[in-house]
Image (cartoon, rainbow, N blue to C red; front, side, top):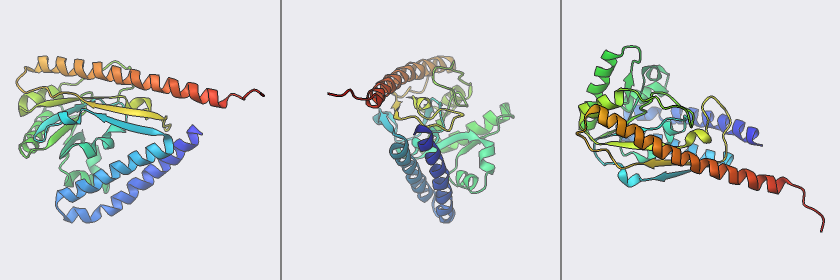
Length: 257
């Protein structure tokens, strides 16, 4: 049943994406806010599909910690889930993402229209300078820069590998940074089509104020994200164990009275 539900979800997820890509075409000629409204609708529709087809719910904690003005949002990255699920909760998001995504037909056009921040991972120094310049411009307009400090998805429990870019942006932009912990990898694993029932929990932690030196900031960011993520993963594992135990009890044949 889990496999069938996962296959159905994935088919509808990509169909839903295609339909939204077509529906968004008129927004290319409209102010950027209309595209953002449609992107949030797409995000909510994905969460609805996950909840109703796969039993994957979502819980967001600490939303009051998200600043209304310019800020960095530094999120743990375990799954593709957080690349869309955070959209409804950030007032004016600007994702830092790999440059190749900007070249995709339709999808890339909308990334350009949304003023997302592409990074050429092979360029290193020049890429860091270009990213910083763009981030300066966007936070000056009150936007929240979403960055995944590890740069790629890491499975729950994997050794963290934080990159230098987030500390550099923190020092150069002079805005607060909100650490974000989550446990999405338990329910939407990377490199797997299966979607496991349970509750994805996301926690926006209190902002780290500007002014720390880079190393102190990097150490604090990593410690706070990893500690909160470990706690959320433990919650998810306990929930999964309870659900599996209940499922086994329901599957066992009942004795005759």
